[in-house]
Length: 189
Image 1: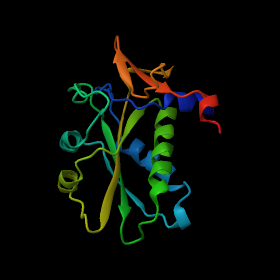
Image 2: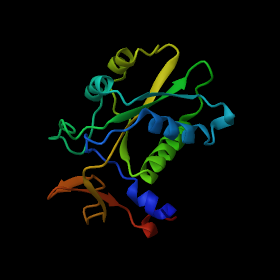
Image 3: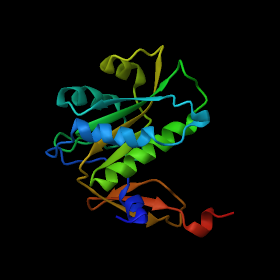
Image 4: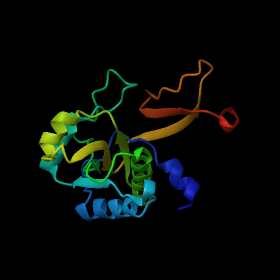
C-alpha cells in the first residue's frame, strides 16, 4: 500500500465488525511500532496497556465518549464495538514533558493498523477515574493519555470539503460518515 493511500485509509472509525477477532499479538505488534518512534529527549515515557479480551473490553467501553459532534449517538452498538484497545499511558516516574509523544505513537499505531486492514479511533474523551479502576492502574505512577479503539472497520468514512459555513464538524448522512477537511491552499501560510 502506498503511504498516501494508507493515510487516506486511516480515518477515525467508530463502528467495527465485532465478529472479526483482533489478536493480542496484533496489538503487541502495533505497540512495537510505537516503541520505535521518536520521543522527547529520548526519555521514552510512554507505556501501554492492551486488551483483546472480550470481558475487559466490555468494561473499558463505557468509559469512552465516542463522538462529540454526534450528540444523539452514544457510540457503537453491540456487534459494532472494537475488538481491541491500546491504552497509552505516561510513566510519571520518568517525566512529564512529552506531550507530542502520545500523538506520534497513536498515529504510528493507527497507520500500522491501516496497513493490516484494521482501523480505529484515537480517544481523549475518557472517564479516566473509572478507567484507572477498570484497568487496575496506579494513577500515582501512570497517567492515562489516550485510548485507541482497534477493530475491523464496518463503516464508510469519506473526506469531504468544508461547506461554505466553514464548519469542520463531522456528520453522518445516508449511512456514510463525512469528515470535512480544509483545502491545502487554506492551510499554507
